[in-house]
Amino acid sequence: MRPHALVFALLVLTRFVVAAPSAPSPATSPAAAGSTKPSALRLLHRDPAAATARTAFVDVNVLPMDAERVLLRQTVLVEGDRITAIGPVGEVAVPTDARRIDGTGRFLLPGLGEMHGHNPPVGSSVDYVERIYFLFLSNGVTTVRGMLGWPGQLELREQVRDGRLLGPTLLLAGPSFSGASVASPQAATLRVEEQKREGWDLLKVHPGVKREVYDAMADAADRLGIRFSGHIPLEVGLEHAIARRQETVDHLDGYVELLGGDQGPLDPARLAAIVRSTRETNTWVVPTMALWETIIGAADLASMLAFPELRYLPKAEVERWRVSYERRLADPKFDRARARRIAENRIVLLRALSEGGARVLFGTDAPQQFSVPGFSIHREFPLMLAAGMSRYDILRSATRTVGEHLAATDRFGVVAPGSRADLVLARGNPLTDLAHLREPAGVMVRGHWLAGDTIAQVLAAYAERRD
Ligand SMILES: [Zn+2]
Image (cartoon, rainbow, N blue to C red; front, top):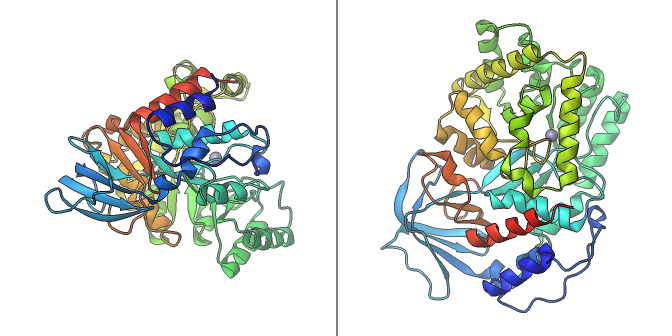
């Protein structure tokens, strides 16, 4: 049975499709021209009852993420896409028409943000787009900042926003500013104006941009009120990028280079100085620790090939990752000792940034080599713990801090009345063990509820079909 048909059957059986849905419209996105098959996930998302119903999480322990605390035995009410009430179970009345979700012994926390994520590449099939978005949601990732735009991608953001496509809320960077795409200050200015006009949420910086071109981009961005984020081009350098108020430094790019971290230990005084200026300029960092170990060749290929979550992606894609990693290691210029040194210095660096009060945003660069959407959060957690971040610090970087970063777009990232109803229902307390976020009892995205058993069944269908 094809996953779509299977999923649709499951959803009918589990009474998810309450109202008879109308025939699905064929794909309209240029990104998704490969298939016109009915999509059960899309039907689920279009189900009007799911969008308007009231839901009550009854007798649940809540991690509101406004502070490091757990509110025991609460009722949380959701209406439409908003949290409307929260209070002790005996004090919050559950409306008679509300769907009740038993929270006994479970822990409810805000949905997580993937702040350096990617959309499926241009030309992907509908099935693949849905699969990637569902993988994010299956692990409680309800907001994704897409860090590489391509023409037509904005349509996906709109499809998710208006309910034609089930997925995390998307914030999108436009096609990147790189050495190849912007050769002159004039070209940079025009590109900023164009992307602002087209409606991209931010600009993406890639390597290779010359300093005068970067400055022209920054000037135009300041003038038009759009921010730029991403890599630190070598010729620009970290200190200049921070001074020009690059909004996020992704992958901790530029730090190791500035501090000579590929040669030896980081100099404590210089490290303290750059941490201070990161904090004082309110620059955010998106470490993507696990992914970067893969990119620099410091990760172990056999361990990565054994990741169980690879089974949810097409076989050909995993094979491309393997080949690319083997090629990296086989490069005569590849120096494993240097790669390990950089990886270790990145841990020291993240520790200094976190302890020094710099604002850390959670990101894993999924989907990307061995970084499987959603599941990749569990590859990132151990490295953040190794850098001395507490479980609360880590969760905060994926919830409240993301909400603060994107406060101009919506209210989310905490469990409080008025917040967007993006929620994860964990089977145990993640403040005790982050592994409790595995196989959640359910995930809510903008008020749409995905029960744990439904998630498991959809994942099983994806594991069945990997072409
Ligand atoms: Zn990326």
